[in-house]
Image 1 (cartoon, one colour):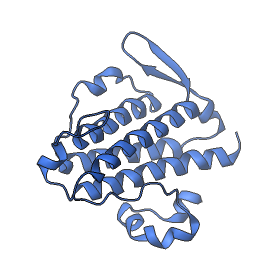
Image 2 (image 1 turned 180 degrees about the vertical axis):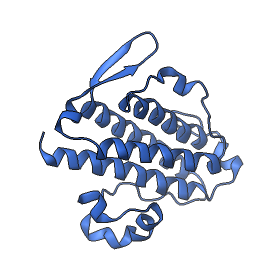
Image 3 (image 1 turned 60 degrees about the horizontal axis):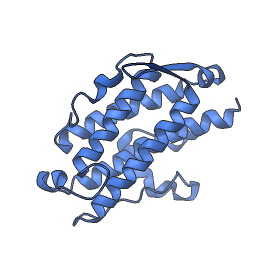
Image 4 (image 1 turned 135 degrees about the vertical axis):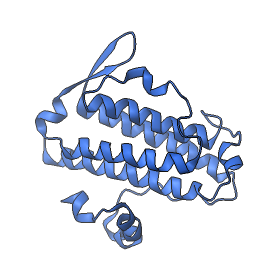
Amino acid sequence: MPASLLLALRSMAYNNAWANHRLHAACAGLSQAEFEAERIGFFPSIQATLNHILIIDYFYVDALEGGTLGPAAWANEIPCPTLAELRPAQAAVDRRLIACCEALDEAGTNRIVEVHRGSRVQRERADRLLLHLFQHQVHHRGQAHAMLSGTRVKPPQLDEFFSEGEAPLRAEEFAALGWTEARIWG
């Protein structure tokens, strides 16, 4: 596997965490009632959508780490009822996903991951599973972003992928996350 694919997977994990960070920061401007309010989307609220992202991260990151959590991940559809609970939980699983991607080498991307789905065990290559997870998260963050557009809070820009020329614009957020450009691209 070319080093460029390893770099792409690692940078996607960082971008995933950054997008979650930005979206959660914007949602901090909502009241609890606004966070829970029924809206148009696959899930009926910003709260439910962001909790779904968290739950699916738990499910797949556990599998990538060799765990067997499986469907127990979604035993509680809203594990974090408030944004104050959700933000640190999402940040923690984002760090786990970054660690999984940073640990990858060519053999690791080809490793077969067992995804426990209750009645069966899905066997999937790690790189394919990661790409699926990243796509899933982009999809649902987009839905939360659209829901946020219907509130008084301005949605954050989430369609960036670490353009080199815009590094100064994200420097403050990277500092808050404890990251540097060199860490991601190094």
